[in-house]
Image (cartoon, rainbow, N blue to C red; front, side, top):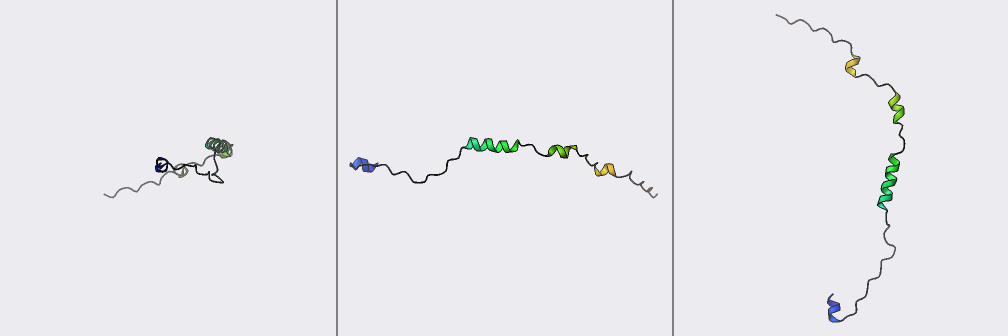
Length: 69
């Protein structure tokens, strides 16, 4: 700005060559969401019977010994 006050000619700087790559963020988001919408093999896993919890698999607990008097 000081150059302009002193009467010097002001010129615009040249644009840099090979500018940065511009990424369309909305398009990238849509592509990411489309990948997640792909059907997962979860149906095959859901059809398999589930294992019973370990507590349910164990037989009745052994009888406790009588307390000594």
